[in-house]
Image (cartoon, rainbow, N blue to C red):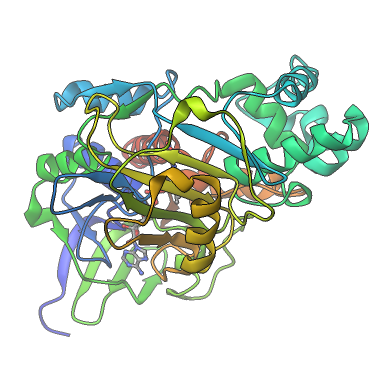
Length: 409
Ligand SMILES: Cc1cc2nc3c(=O)[nH]c(=O)nc-3n(C[C@H](O)[C@H](O)[C@H](O)COP(=O)(O)OP(=O)(O)OC[C@H]3O[C@@H](n4cnc5c(N)ncnc54)[C@H](O)[C@@H]3O)c2cc1C
């Protein structure tokens, strides 16, 4: 076993959570090694760039005003923000709704009925009301709230788009926590693409601390420390930060085996379709008989009028490309044919991800509580360990929290 490296902490995964944990630990004087399976850093932050300069975010894209970790890094690295979006429509029962319909407003009012009922937003597992809501699904909520059929259709499209699951898979508690803690306001995008942020984090950390193309296969762990093994390396350390999505963790052998709490995950992703022109935003709502996706928008920066766009179809399950292109063609005949090859980003199909992002279902609250505790020498991090999960900001917050926990001993 000659040549085993020794570090204070091994961080598994160079997504936003792993990079943040590594930066914070390094700042606290730890000797850190990050092991990343892919040839690139960023994980679910990935900006696809076309040769003509057009780009689109395959993963994280929108930044809400309360995403202080993201906004702090934007400032620290001197990145630009652009506000607002271009053309955008939610597809409900085949209608691509450009304007927010009356159903949207009525559902939002009904959701406000969930406000003010939770008493411990930082420890929802200690709150009896939260525990009760955790047992119910978003479908149960729709029943209690007495939504009309068209309001239910809108809410279903919304849940599929926001959480990438079906309403019966999402807990009512996630909706209630969202009402309290998540503005849902897609205020900004990072001007040069979201990957600028994770690239800057990797630069600050230093490439010598990040090994790319090194999928971790096994983590041996005991009272005194860990040994983390890839195909070609073995790194011994006092502890490991496990900053990979839960489906990807299932592919890593933990020795001895431990049961890692699991929470429900969304599926699907985006199909990015380059077009020589953009949809006519003034043409009003459009209809198609069948649409597999629920959300469609133009990804090209709106401050570059006239440049060709990239239309993004957002779907809560992977869809065959011809089906998406047919639907887009029926909804937007003015676009003509794509002027480049579509880029599929079905994250739930990728072994390094296996999901889009977590969407806790009925009964998942206790798993969340346990995911926030170390398992011996193993420290889970990642968006799925946060009370408001599923965002880039969630991942960054988790990295900071886990690093602080390690530093405080
Ligand atoms: C389609 C889509 C749209 C999204 N839109 C938004 C949005 O608009 N706004 C927003 O804030 N968030 C959005 N998100 C969510 C955001 O991208 C994630 O919450 C965040 O990037 C997750 O970061 P993470 O570090 O927890 O996980 P990841 O980014 O998944 O990082 C995990 C890392 O671990 C690596 N890894 C996996 N297995 C191994 C292994 N065995 N060994 C070593 N490394 C391994 C992976 O390659 C990856 O780099 C979106 C996500 C998706 C999929």
